[in-house]
Length: 69
Image (cartoon, rainbow, N blue to C red; front, side):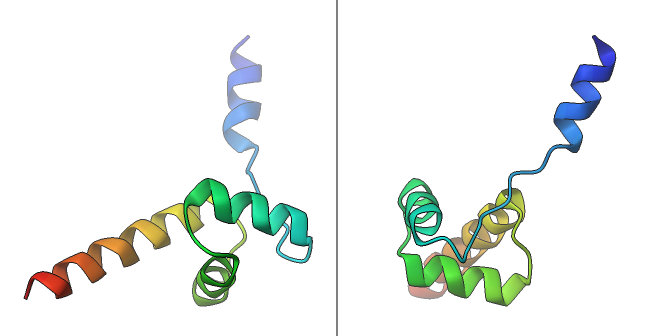
């Protein structure tokens, strides 16, 4: 049972940016446009869903902070 938990942790969700259907699915799920998703992937040079989410959240936080100034 413990080995299954470790293997689930090691499994990473990757976004296939070349597949338009996959790209559109993840863009909709993340609440961004397909172009914003591609820009995020280019900016962080990573296809891992968790890293992309972190980047988008950081970007959203920075935009909100700059609007308040």
